[in-house]
Length: 190
Image: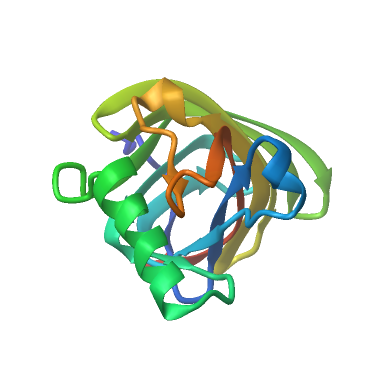
């Protein structure tokens, strides 16, 4: 009897080789001169699987450790402490919601070149205790031993019950929208 996953190859995310960022945008009149902080997401775990040649039966799951977010911008130590305090304690509430998780439910792909695909991944994102359906578009290069995916997406903090941050005594308020960019490397598992 053939296995249900016959021909499927499995990849594990290499968090050290991957780059995943999120940028919060300043709002209002101060947005012209204000800081729009950008954060690196340092601790990503997860796996992808697919049948080579057509991405049949493809799947993706990812978990992000919220405490691994790190501000990328050059800011003073006191500004860094304040931004991180607001982000971790008031917005993300990392002690109550330590992870963010994404799990695909459907993957569709269009071949664009040799081992290259334009991929749409539908799935569920769980953030701050709320789970919402979400779609991701990616450019994927599927090699024999590595899988590379890159793309970007936005999400609204209010959709996940996140408080919209303000720092510096309210002089800097951020928009509801967050912009994410990613370049993810997966290593084949034998």
